[in-house]
Image (cartoon, rainbow, N blue to C red; front, side):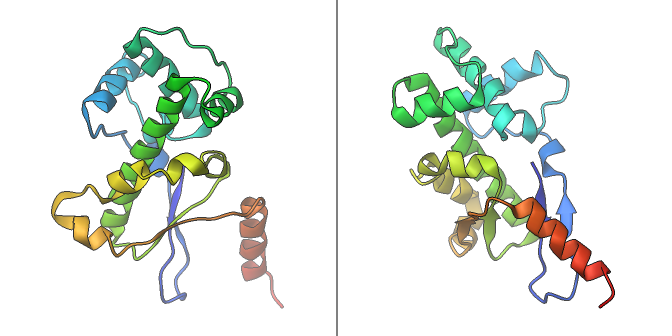
Amino acid sequence: LGAALRFADGERPVLASEIGHAALGAGNALELQVLGKLLQRWPHVDNERVLSGSGLMNLYPCLCELRGATPQWTSTEALIGAARSGEDPLAVETLQVFCAWLGSLAGDAAIAVGARSVYLAGGISAHVQDFLADGRFRERFLNKGVLTDVLRQVPVWRVEHGQLGVLGAAVWHAARTPA
C-alpha cells in the first residue's frame, strides 16, 4: 500500500511514500476490536495488514471471530466474490469495514499533505468498487472533525488502468533517457 504526492506545478518529481507501513489507526469500536485481535499476532500492525488485497484475509477472520462465526473463505478472490454476490453477510461486512477504513486513511493522508484531489489506484480498488461507492468510504474520508469542510472540496477518483506499473516505469525511463 503506497501513496504518492504529485505537485500541482509539475516541476518537481512525484514524492513516493510507504504509508502502508505506518501504524493502522482505529476509528471506531469495531476497528479497535479488530486491531486488538491483530495485535495478538503482530507487535506492529500497519495499514497494509488490513488495507490491501492480502489484508482482507487478515480482516475477515477477525470479524468472524468477533461475530462467533467460522471463516468460510480462504482466498481474497473467494471472499470478494461472496461479498459481491451477497451470499455471505460476513464477507459483505468485511468489504464494508475495509472500504470505511480505507476512507479514513485516505482522509488522513489528504489532510497531512493538503491534497486537492485523491486518486485510488491498484488492483483491489477495481474489485471492491461497488463497496467503495456505497458511502462508507466517503463518510470516513470526511469524518475529520474541524477539517471535514476542507475535505468536502477534495474529490476522490478511482483510476481505472490495468497497467499502471508499466506506465509509471515507462514515464520514469523516458524522463531519464536522453532524446
